[in-house]
Length: 467
Image 1 (cartoon, rainbow, N blue to C red):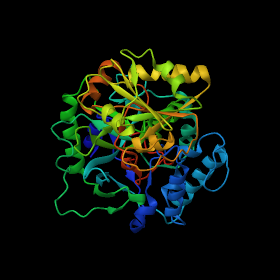
Image 2 (image 1 turned 45 degrees about the vertical axis):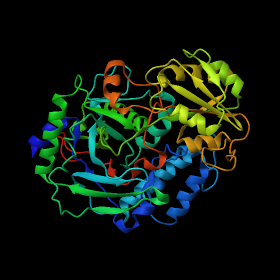
Image 3 (image 1 turned 60 degrees about the vertical axis):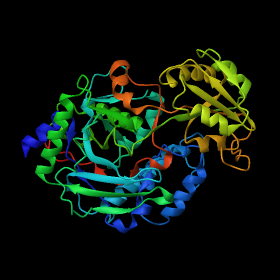
Image 4 (image 1 turned 120 degrees about the vertical axis):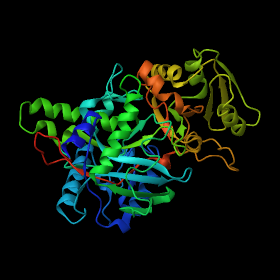
């Protein structure tokens, strides 16, 4: 047993103590989408509240970012960040001390997720060692960020993590597993094995099923497969953060604080705060698509933004004759020799031709940051073209009526072209993290749902055991 834990630890992993809700029949109200989705759509989160009702739910354990904005109204009224975080901690304690969770088990979870867009996306829920992770630009660790991390986005997440008695992940790590070694054959899982949970996810987000991997031979298979992948990795770069980097960075920050405050204490090496619960997926899984994360700039106009983007190489702007339909076809054309952008605001739309090869955010983001800082404007990051068109007040392709101008005048949306996922590991290994919000793993409804939990409040012995 100790040999398996040592092998996993060398791979940056540990076996967690997994908590699942006792009432698995209520999965559709328990599991809630990642907190950083639908950041401009309070109505979505109000629908979540309606779907949850009086049931126990991970909704009470998270801070949806739509309410993290200054002055935002929570579904329960206007409350400040401190009050919301205190309520999260109370809910966690209540759930741990009450009858919400079944007894924990030491093990991993193999899961399969069906979404409205893809079937059978496979993953492995396990704990990762935060000492093997670094989000910095020059990171050479086993676990690395794929996108830029904004330090100003960490304090609220760290405040939640710092005193949290449990965690539930929306963090997704990717492995570069073109031959499907890790999850192509579920590790040690008999074909007839019944899942620990199976059910639909709320608001039309598909379904999920998870199987317990709680036997030593299953962990040994996982270790052996990852050891094979590690031997093939680029400079000992085994895991890339696909989603939830700011949450993982917050967990890292809290662990570094804790280490410094408890240096030399017995049991520190095995403290649960050293680890974070994540889901590992295969970059090459056919059910994983990379989608661009579009931009929307508030309190500006099309002409001002055009001026800010004029330094893009090969810059040329024109109005598509067929409106938004043609704009979207041109921007999303996989055979375009260079990256194109689409600008939309109300009834106006423009296609921007550029000479950019590769990921367009590398050239785009610095111009946007400079523009927003100089003018005192704000930028948000939008998952899904339809949502971008709605927020910009533009008729989406295929609609017969104008879009719902939820923001009003002064919002200009920037539609980004597709992203090639196959280049991710090589690009990050060579150049470090990409600009923030460069890609999204699928559409908003495909994001990870909070489901499995892990207790953080019990300190283990110094020998690393199942956490």
